[in-house]
Image (cartoon, rainbow, N blue to C red; front, side):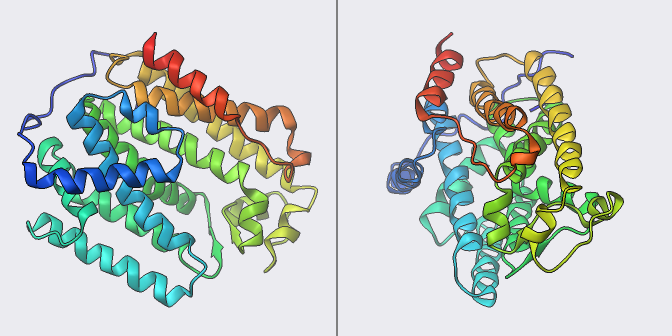
Length: 299
């Protein structure tokens, strides 16, 4: 969400809302509310059309993410994700069959959202769908972050009205910062699910013997150096995102600013806790998240 004025209006975004879409709009909003996300109120700050579009994007992400995180077998997950790939194709052929995809395609028509970004999100969920998850190298980690986080950022900046190439830069910087923070925060939880997002080439570079058991990898003393190296990348991405945001009309990018500020608080808590305590849970209290939303949503 990455020097010059950054806000332009997206052609065609003033299309009227057909009354027949009302049920789909209510459905995707209900998904957002039920999710309990603290960013619901950040999205509520947006004008009506942008808010409805963001709800549709969030609902789409929730649908495919839930598939990847389900405890079901890998074959079933991949089949369901393939169904979503087909649904994306139907969306862009003008024949969506689900409430979420009907809401998404309305958003796409108004804000010129790219089909390849939705496909990238599904590809990211396919990376997560395996019975075990390993990342071969830093290039694959960057690809993973792009698919599960930066692609969502590209859709979001398109809705916010951030002009290119600044919108893509913001999505890249902030998406990587948020996903790397997630990885560092969830090391133990992911390990228990046989997921290890630390790149194997980076582990080997620090003399860490990779095994079939992620917990064994994390418990090796040298792992703290890997955590630190990834945290330095995340810190640089937060700084890059803040620089881009500072050059934007703050009213247009309030949701991105709120998300960054909340995640930055998580990241700073991780840094203060220290990497030798990598299994110790870190979270931001709900009241603090609401304060951040109020501060950046009103002031």
